[in-house]
Image (cartoon, rainbow, N blue to C red; front, side, top):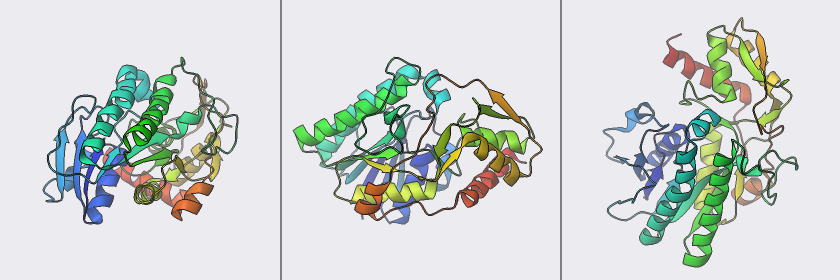
Length: 312
């Protein structure tokens, strides 16, 4: 039985991680300030003796009493609409927040896992993206606040590992979807589902030929869990390498929802990656992990969750 701190624990991914550790019999401390997380995501855990919630901004000094075995740092805006609206908070949680949580890991002698992102690869010139690719990032572009926050967080994590001997892990998360995504998240799948369920025009940016590889949340959480318990220190990609264009994904969701929606093409945002696909060879070899959930089944689960919350 372990004692685990999850920052950003009321967010989409964080709340699913809380569930994972509690199901494994561990004690979970969830920390969030609800900038982008929601109490609804963890409401089912209140009253569980294995669960404790602390409302706190992790860019400030963090106090947790007692021992900690693991710290998972997932606090951060993660959707473009969030980090474009909250650029300084995004940079602060990636820098100051990572510094504070690493300091806590050092003090508690806890294993630390940082939630990094495929965005560290920027608009990649290498395809698919391997962990040894350094990326193609515009540091002064609008997306740079997120990309560089995560790149800095990785560098800080490795510095604490090398200089202070903190036991660290780095997961590079590729596009993930599933129940509990914010209804107004702003990313492709929530947008497509929302618009399709309401029979509104489905907005596709550019000509829709840009690609993403989308991973169902249960698969992602299992990969993160295995990485945490492994002995691998260097970054590991976790994602589903099944690549699809945005136009294909939009049409798939329109079909699965039985919608009457039509496609509405919009101008492509600045620095939007044209391709995104993880090379998951290291995850397979090191963690014996690969994505299992079929995309259509995962989308059906997500659509049903959205229907319930939208009362449709």
